[in-house]
Image (tube, rainbow, N blue to C red; front, side):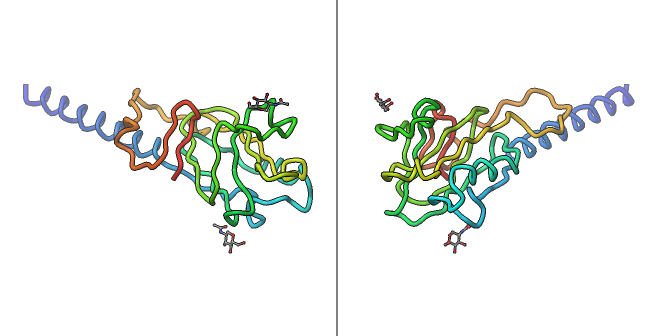
Length: 165
Ligand SMILES: *[C@@H]1O[C@H](CO)[C@@H](O)[C@H](O)[C@H]1NC(C)=O
Ligand SMILES: *[C@@H]1O[C@H](CO)[C@@H](O)[C@H](O)[C@H]1NC(C)=O
């Protein structure tokens, strides 16, 4: 009887440890500066610049992309794939007027550009794929993500799939 109870306690502890490490794992977030040292600007190298920047990394849910630029010189606009391709920045889905980080909450491809005239055509645009999880699979029980309402945020959009941080 005692042995059974000890075994039960060990099992409960083991499950708790797995659950806690899963929660810690899922909230890990890497932060990237878009364009690295170049920041968010009209790149001297043209449109290929941000494509090669994005290709260097593998972004996953919870990662943060920081758009670094001088307010008043650029914006960050989330647009549809169609509008991204033709550089249509009229009525973007979302716009940042100042530098900020965006934390991605769902796996998707996101299309960002700048609403200043000529900047998109000049190559200030980036397509970012956010994968659903890190490549190392964790043998985890299903743990619900923390409710969005408990997160400290100033902006969140489940529809857009990211929040401002
Ligand atoms: C943002 O850009 C400024 C000006 O180029 C630079 O001094 C600063 O280090 C950059 N910040 C980050 C996080 O890259
Ligand atoms: C540009 O995008 C806006 C917002 O999605 C849309 O209403 C408009 O029709 C688009 N213009 C062109 C030329 O595609």
